[in-house]
Image 1 (cartoon, rainbow, N blue to C red):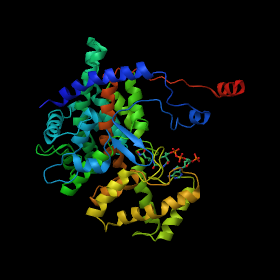
Image 2 (cartoon, rainbow, N blue to C red):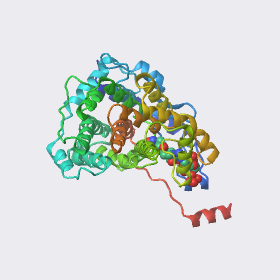
Image 3 (cartoon, rainbow, N blue to C red):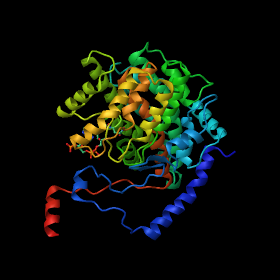
Image 4 (cartoon, helix red, strand yellow):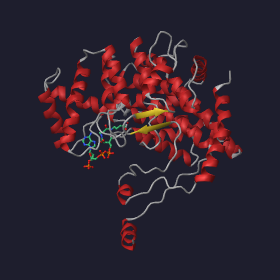
Length: 435
Ligand code: HAX
């Protein structure tokens, strides 16, 4: 069996040729034009970058290398006795474009185990940070602390051909991904528990071990963790965490710098932090109404109060999607199977019934439907992970797989430093007048 690295290496040259041919034959084709509104408006919808790992359709949602979520849940290898896909499988798929076999997945699991030891200097760096520092800050710092061991930096200093850049990038990515559950679970332990690190269980897979090292010994939670890590792994290239990782990496900053930057973007409330905000919002509802499941009328009032106070309804809306996020649906299915009577799940379901109508009536959001973050927190609460400030770290561990696969391909394809042109309002006015 070819190793993952050999499989990847074999794909690089044909892909380089394919891209060169596309550029040679179609390089002058226009794929997007940019309006003034788009230039001011976050470049919404402007097609100006290439990401191979996944593609997002506004109505259907995400496809990872062509596969939608139900297909992945069916086709990706599972843990023994498990029903949810293993995250190692989505990593293999995102990186190579091939559906992995059980053996391929096992290889990734074993490879990550070998590389998972956290160096002392990383642990010391994390210990130097106050425990009440936001978990995302700790996560970003932890990733940066590993940068001193970058293979890319070492090889770059020694001198290497551009054609070889992907190789040390791959090594950094594998070293980094192997350590993320250890870093993340330590953040959880030191921020909320006894501060002691729980050693990895050599019998467990990457996701199962993450749950184990957090201290949540529940087989169902391990299954949830695997599903969660698959669902959040990638969402094409234009979202803040993916685009930031790609942008920073384009300066040949190594994967540690690039991912740490991407994680900082994920920490924004309009992006990944929305998952903690959803739970915070639900807790506020419960507190204000004296606990329990609110009535529909109470929830409607609370949603309107949120909007009227100038806040967004967290977990609803999307820059690209125009339908219910299939990642939301997958989590809802998990909840219906494992915890249909759970109180927080009932509230999340009730919000799903009323929020889209309210957002439509409010008339601003282009997409009134729930995104991935509207559901993830309630499942965590069900299994006892109630510290919602931690939720975006879970997202970050997963998202690292997609953005780092793309980074390897960026280097394999020799993509250049990213440098769009900015304009001034004066330029816009002159340009419009001249037209
Ligand atoms: N509640 C209230 N207002 C909303 C809204 C929501 N959930 N979603 C959008 N709007 C408002 C916007 O704030 C904007 O208002 P202004 O015109 O006053 O600026 C207007 O509707 C148009 O926005 P849009 O074009 O529909 O949405 P954007 O592409 O600008 O933004 C966001 C997309 C996801 C940031 C937005 O929908 C939002 O803020 N949602 C709530 C936060 C959230 O759930 N974020 C997570 C998104 C998924 C993700 O990245 N996960 O990591």
